[in-house]
Amino acid sequence: MIRRLRPFVFPVLILAALELWARTVGAQSDAIAPPSAALHAFGGALTDGSLLAATGFTLGSAALGLLIGGGLGVALGTLLGLSAARRGCLFSAWKF
Image 1 (cartoon, rainbow, N blue to C red):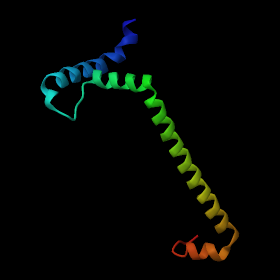
Image 2 (cartoon, rainbow, N blue to C red; image 1 turned 180 degrees about the vertical axis):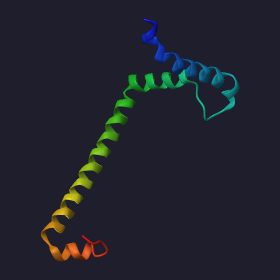
Image 3 (tube, helix red, strand yellow; image 1 turned 135 degrees about the horizontal axis):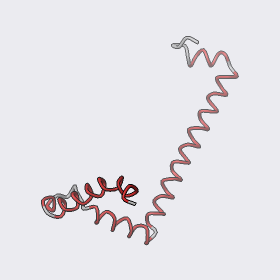
Image 4 (tube, rainbow, N blue to C red; image 1 turned 90 degrees about the vertical axis):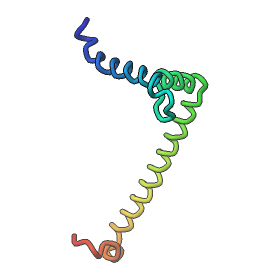
């Protein structure tokens, strides 16, 4: 049982030290939040649905960018593959 918990000891100690530091010495800092506050904000965002909405928006943006980039890449690759003149014009600096 102790061997299973052993990998978690160091991270828990680091989080506990950060929590203690953020609540005492770093209390005046706007840059460092205690881990418990971050966990509380994560739980709040998960329960009110804003986290899932933001994740969906981000994934949609990434998929759209991939679709645009892939479409342009395939179109340009097809154009270059079908025309030796265009291939020479675009890649004149490179030697194939």
